Image (tube, rainbow, N blue to C red; front, side, top):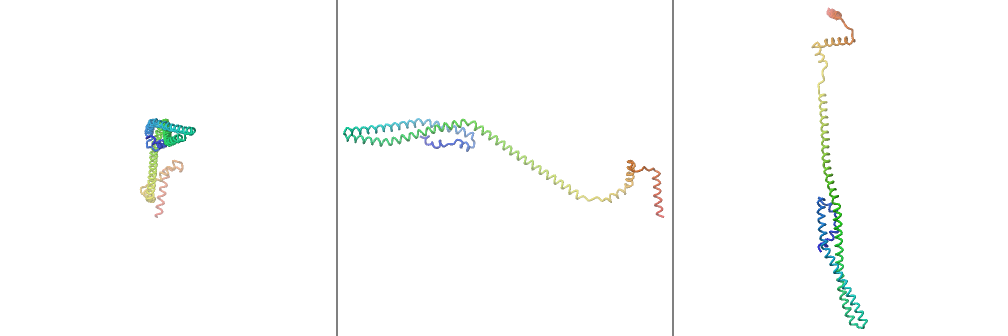
Length: 250
């Protein structure tokens, strides 16, 4: 009766809960199917014996009841015949059989309950096996999709990290450019202002002033912005300038 001792465990087994708790549901499916098949084989093996026991105890209880009724009828016939002593003997036998019948009835009820449980376990195991077999392909497909999704999520997480690194690199690059711009600005501020008088002095010291005036005059003439002058006019102007200087000295 080993299977009957496991009646509660078999009947309360929740296949979905077992699969949810499994670390590797795919392997758990095959293992669960093997366990259920073994349980079903054990149930089938013991079912015949349990049902035979139910039949035997029920037959004995029924036979006992038949005997009880028989001796009860004999007691009535003895009394009808006026033989009270014989009636007493028949009633004693009837009472003895009734006491035995109580125990036989209990045994029959236990055997009947065992047979009911065996049938319930058989039906439950067959149902679980059929359900698991029908769902096996779907469950394995779902597991495969779940694993693929997990891998995609992991790759997405890696991509997010890489994107974050690129964003950080861009921030560093921007910060470096800002530092460079500030450094250049400070360099400009630190430059010594150029002395315009010194620059002009250098120009005139090298005779650049007259040359610049001549070049400017020539450019004006070329562009029609000033009248052209002849060489004689230039010489006359030069003599007039010299005379004026001599006069000032006298």
